[in-house]
Length: 99
Image (cartoon, rainbow, N blue to C red; front, side):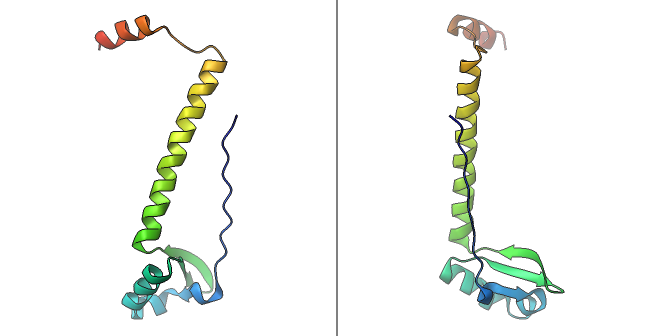
């Protein structure tokens, strides 16, 4: 069993701002990102160059990344088990005592 995640993120037009607008009024943009929980896309010459996240949204991203890393580790372990890449507990214990 493989774990796959797919996230589609819709960016509202009101959440796209020129970097210069952000530089002029960073507090307002940060307050808005924190209040709405939506990311703000910052542009330079009309092209996305950065994303501003509020504190809670950033924490949620970090938690999701940690969860994904855990799931990938579990998947690697299951793959190793399936392919016979294992050692006995006794051998593992001896190896660890030798460290």
